[in-house]
Image 1 (cartoon, helix red, strand yellow):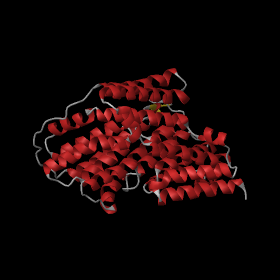
Image 2 (image 1 turned 30 degrees about the vertical axis):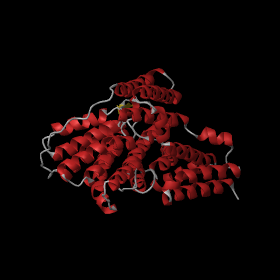
Image 3 (image 1 turned 45 degrees about the horizontal axis):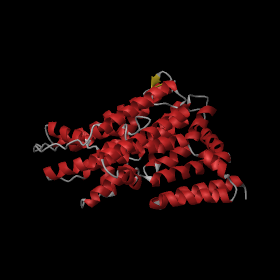
Image 4 (image 1 turned 45 degrees about the vertical axis):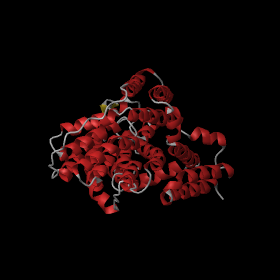
Length: 422
């Protein structure tokens, strides 16, 4: 059988199994890689080179820094101050969502939810209110703002590495407003949706003692990491420097954490998200196999034929197909597979690839907000609610996630088109 057909069959089967058995996705990704090597589709060396080690380094390093930042109690301290200053419950919830978004721009989404969730649950107990809507709002706010910067979430890291974008490029790219401003415009419209959802909660919040900060040093480390990434954008070779910087700050965080709290290194290594690390490695190799066998060119030719010379139609298809698919499947493997397709299609149409790449990122990252299974942050938020005795139905999540997503995506979609279509 043709190696091109075999590679596609293994790739599609693996992705289907990711959807059907999400808890076993690491096993299936590693098994698929082993099968590709065993049948000779890809060599061990090619498999190793298929992995974007810069993205892996960014992910590992920032996750360690985020863990230390969380345990410092600074986010919890800030959230409780915000609650104390809010004039009623509605604004307290909205301010918590804004804080969630701010943290998520620099800290991975799941970590952000774990930082903010205890504050939200505490508020709901004080006010004797159902926390379900609030927790959903926190999860989707985290997913939205995680797209805004290079280090906010894996999809942003993937795009940045693929397009050779540095930290500053997410703000200003090729002399034009970039992803950050598209996301923030979407955030404004989605915030209006959240206001209408929570506007009837007029209850006053009783005063309570504010959480004490264990140490401000982790905040300084996080701020220094962001500053270092911004500076390296102008001084070093982006391909490797960002990953090296993130790993160095991760090591610093482990050392500092050990001084602040005994056994911090051991606990961090035990609780570290190794599953996502190995899953990402497996997906990179899977996509590398279909790239090496020519399927990226085939897919881009099909997409170009579908849209013809109508660039607006092509852009619209890329954004909203990504939104729909990401509502049900993991956005990371989908984005890794689609980035080269979007870039190749743009090149065939002789347009700036940024239009399709930015549209793909927006659709892929924000589409996960529609359903409870669309993003890891959603799953974590719902599992925390389940521990508290609250079960969330699919339609209950959809009532908040769908209007929030449509508002954010539509605003960002038009922004990217008007800025980058010319």
